[in-house]
Figure 1 (cartoon, one colour):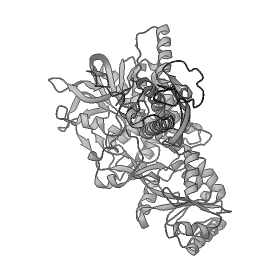
Figure 2 (cartoon, rainbow, N blue to C red; figure 1 turned 180 degrees about the vertical axis):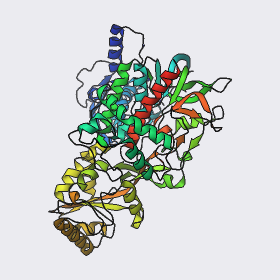
Figure 3 (cartoon, rainbow, N blue to C red; figure 1 turned 30 degrees about the vertical axis):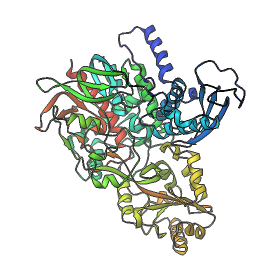
Figure 4 (cartoon, rainbow, N blue to C red; figure 1 turned 120 degrees about the vertical axis):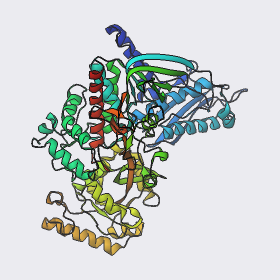
Length: 637
């Protein structure tokens, strides 16, 4: 395949202010070409107003400008391609709805690669496969319209891979992984005066937080008090987490989390400038005895963007599209660096400390049990357990725990075979209105404000292991307005509504309950009686079947059209990982600390037990990343 230039930026910590400004400008040119820049043409020469569809005297193409679109991850990706008789002169992404943090790399690099190589033999960008494939499919369409040979261009431009350059870097700390934990650790370590190299295999920093529901535990923070809760405690949080995790949590790690998440939240807000949705307030969740979860302003993708900008300004050297493959150890067994590579360079990164922050292993079936393999996956493509794989290699011999557990949620929709997206933000809003959960028989079967764990356990017992979210017109409008935080676009919703239950994900709708029941093969009388019964509970202010709290029984299911949205188990977050101390030092299978090796975030096992409550994973990633940086800085004094 044609290999495009690497999306990489670096800072010299000791550069003076003017040099940093220049480098920041350079970074903006290289990696800040996000979505707006995608509207620019990538050309071999300046565009000269090529006439539309001019007949050439001779050549490969019918000269002109052609447009085509193909389905991306969040909706259609529209491309405009301009040809002379003998060349592709520009490729422009005109319209798209892709997630910025994930899609910005292919939206810029693939059009450039097509023009530079005069080829369609371009690699997809890891982690953004659907967007990449949409660009290439639309480009193929335009080539065909212009009379070009699509198959020839799919093989054109292939080159024998050049021998990679060997490069050695020396630093205080190498952070492997650019998700929430890795970014927090990098920012904090640079604040504390360490030189940091961050290695990220994807074309962007962001990880799981980028596609998360965008919520975080904020217990003990000034923000929690500002939002109206001042009586929460470390003891209460530990008790809640232990109960939710079936008491499989490592006590000292959940204690560490509870004692430090408040200070981390305030640091994120005050120093990292990460804003929380105080207008939306603290979320009321069954898992928590006190309200302790806030949403990020703009959701998870926005939070990741803020953290990326903080890393950009920190002075760290960041290597994107660079996969770490091996931990370097010395004769004593201490970890003293990392081997990594991009498509042009083999790196040996010597470091006084290594922090593994590579996320979980949900996208590595070799590390999953059969139950997890069967669940719909909705996590990042990057979650392949790289840190765990490297650390458990023979030369390091790190210990793991609770590898058999993963977090499943009950509120997934199957957007393609085996792949889910989350409706959790919409559900939270809908259950504050009049939405209820019903099974395929049209029966209400659970308190909709119960814990996710309780709802999941109920869901798994139903026919086909699924539930439906039933909403009236007013509630559905509120529900769909919240789905963007889960990467669900308005175009997606409209397409699913057009299918009207014929294919998954089921977004069925009808003017009457009886008609709606017919669409999904449900008994109409049962559904109508379920709604009547629920509305009676609302009128009386008491749910006599499942105990839904009175504050969530304020609105009857009202006027249609009515909507049914499928709810299936979804899975992304893994509970297992490396065994660590309270200083985030990794231990080996002999229960001895491995000098120089640390872990943070989802790479650590045992914090949550067998299940994690809402907002917990983002909070732990950021808290443990910050704590790891502080522990490393102290150890290197």
